[in-house]
Length: 600
Ligand code: M6R
Image 1 (cartoon, rainbow, N blue to C red):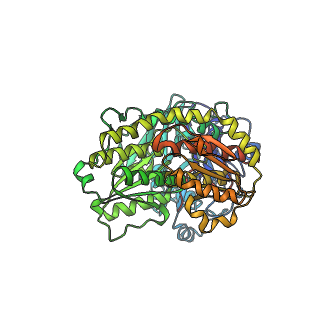
Image 2 (tube, helix red, strand yellow; image 1 turned 30 degrees about the vertical axis):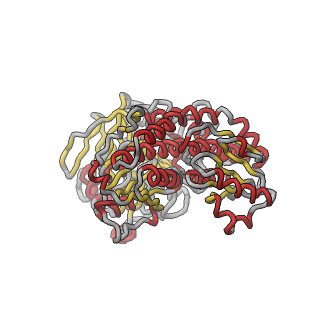
Image 3 (cartoon, rainbow, N blue to C red; image 1 turned 90 degrees about the horizontal axis):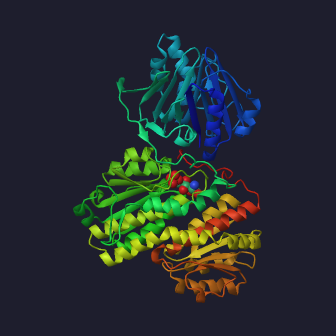
C-alpha cells in the first residue's frame, strides 16, 4: 500500500527522500514521486518503480525540505498524473496522502472553479489548502481547516512554497515522526527513515504536526501538547538485506532469532507459567465462553493453529474469523467473549474494522501484533507484541512463526488461569517453545535439500498441501506462500477432505506436500498420502518418525510436540522461496500484492 516519507533538516532532501522511497518499496506500489523546494516547489512523479522516477530526478539540489510517496492505486490507474505529490493549480501546495478520502466527489464539486489534473481522491487536498490560504489563513490553520472538511482515513504530509516547515495530519492511517541529529523525518512506517534514527514519536488520530528548523510541534484539539519520544529496539540493519538476495530469504533465516525475541523473558518453565504483561483477570477468564480470533491471510492461518491449541489446552471454545467477514453475533455474550485481533502490521483495514465491531458490541479486545504504535494498539484493550523485528518481504514468514509462538504463550496463560492446564502440561508446551529456535535452525541448515526438491518439482502443474489439526493450518499457510510468490496453483486442505473432491485434480504432475508430524495426526494422514500415491502423485512429507515414510522426499522434523507443524512450515517457506526464485519471480514484491492492506 502507499508509503510516505518527509524530511526537513541539514542534509540534501533529494537523497534522503529517494532513499526513504526505496525503503518503502516493500509495501507494494505502482508509482512514485517527490516534491522539493523552498520558495518554489518542484514535483517529479512517475508511474512504475522508484528506478523509473530516479531517471527524471536531478542528480542533486540544494533543497533541505522534501516529501515523497509510493502510490498503490485506488482512485484512478497508475499514471504519471495520478502519482503523488498532488498540487494546487499554482503549484504552491504539494501533498502526499495515504488512505481514502470518502467525500472527494462532493469536495471536487465544491471546488469546481479549480482545475484538476488527476483522477485521484487526494487532489482535493492541495486545492482545499490553497483555498484556505487564499482566504487569509496561516499555513497551519489552512492545513487544519482543509483536513476538517475531509471524511475518510488519511495520513497527509504537506509542503508549501515559501514556508520552511512541513505539516502533517493523520486520521485512521499511521504517521510516525523520526528525530535525528540531521533533521526531522516523517514516515508512514519507521522503515522509511530507520537508517537515520530510532527515536520516534507516534502521532495519534487528529494530531496536527508542524516540523520546522526547531523540531516538532504537535497540536491536539487546537492545543500544543507534549509528545513522547520513544526509542525503537530494532537493529539499525534490521530493514536491510544483509547479504541475502531477497528480504524473504533473509527473514526466513532470521526466524531462530525472532523466536528467541518472542519468548525472551516470558517463560517460567519451572512453574509452567508465562508473563505477558496484559490485564486478563482470572475471574474474567474463568467465566469466558469463547475466544474469537480475527485476522487475514497468514495471520489468519497463525490463528487457525492457535485455535486448535486454545481448544485442546485451555479448554475454551475458539473460533477463527476472516476479518473481512466478521460480525458479532447477537447470540454471543460480549462479556464472556474475548476478541483477539492477530495482525503483523496492526494496520490491516479489515482487521481494524472487525475489532471495532467487537468493541462496539462490548467485547474485551486484545491485539497480537508486531508493530509498536500501530493503529490497532490504540483501539484495543490490551496488546501483546510478537517482537519479530521488521518484516519487509510482502510474504509473511518470520512473523507467522512469532505469531504462533506468541499465541501459544497466550494459550498457556489462559489455560493456567482457567485451571484447565496442569503445570506439567504447561511446562511441556513451554519446553517445546524453548526448543523452537534450535529446531528451526536445524531445518534452515537443510536448505540445500529443499533447493534440490524445488528444482525437481518447480515445473509441476499444481501443488497440494495436506495435514490434519495443526498440520491443516500449516498446509493452508504453505499453499498461500507458494501461490503468492511463485504464481503457481497451490491449495491447502485438511488431509481428510482430499477424497471429497480435490482428489480429482491429483495427477503424477501435482506434488502433494504432507505434514506427518506430531500435532498433525500422522497416523490418520498417512492413508491419505497412500491415496494420492495410488494416483501417481509424488509426495513430499515432513515427518518426525522417519519410519513412517516411503515417500518421494522425506524432510525430517525434530521432536518438538505441538510445535512440530510450525517447524515444518519452515520447509514449506524454503520450498516456496526456491520454486519462485527458480522461476525468476519478484519474490519480495509479488504482483498485485501489498505488505500492509489498508483498504477494505
Ligand atoms: O499485517 P497483517 O498481518 O494484518 O496482514 C494480513 C495479511 O494481509 C498478510 O498476512 C498476508 O496474507 C501476507 N503478507 C501473506 O504472506
